[in-house]
Length: 397
Image (tube, one colour):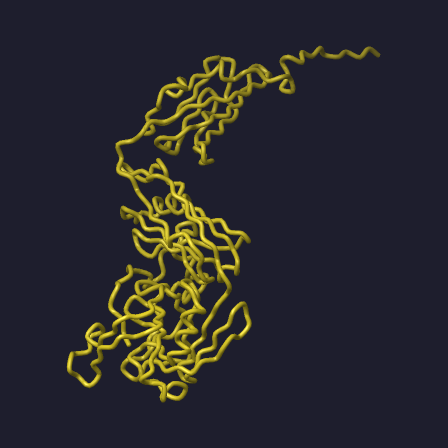
């Protein structure tokens, strides 16, 4: 028996050394690496060799954003299906095949600026150290309501932490997003939030503005739980109880809100008036006082503060106009113990619940499922009632 073997040519095999694919391709206007390409025009790649075909294209910009595209059935051409970013540098990695021979190539180009309006983003809070309950914020310069546009924007707002935690953005309204982890931030964590919107096509006439980055540090886990019916507040750090303090909260008609609140700021002295919360001047409930050691919980004026006039009621009855009052010494200690971003939770009350948004940071009063429902990445509508921006009103007492 005679065995017949076929001859092979390694130079024509797909396992052979790849040739330079870029020599066999046309990149259209992007072919001139020194010219700025119009970002509003699609990227087109075509084979100049009738025997060659394109097998794969990967196009990414300098910050790693990938351009999606479609390859023709015969492999003779490829075109982008997502818009290019303006003012960006791109690298194209392309694979081809010609009569059994593999081709590989890399091509670079840049896009020019666009006449579109910028979608700017202001990240918050400012750099610094915060408590474990501090949400992140992203305020947009233009309204974004369309679900597809929200998806683009949210995908370009990245949050990284060490240690890594699960978290998500939530659309409060068309111009404001909040970000929080599933659970409180770990004590001692470092957090970096960045906007990678630069040049990104949001919609006709609107592209992402310049990128930003913000770094935060998370302090100890300080939590205060105020028992409205029990008239006391327990303050702990990293799970260890520091003190239990006698308090008074809102009386009937001025009940303190139930729920979790995030410390917004602190004022060593603040003037509080009854007229600021709608109490008529000259009425029996009217007041006008300078208050010390005031830790703000809501924009409408709910504080934890010194109330020396109600020391006799602290620990046994609720007599305030909505704030949490304590002695001068206790209020000063509390003021010096907590920081912005720490959690104060009121329980066992008879007032309304703390709103998730619009009057400070009530974000932690939403369940994780409710929070995710406000994320465009999870393709779900905003939960009912999750709207409104802070209304900075005067304090209650």
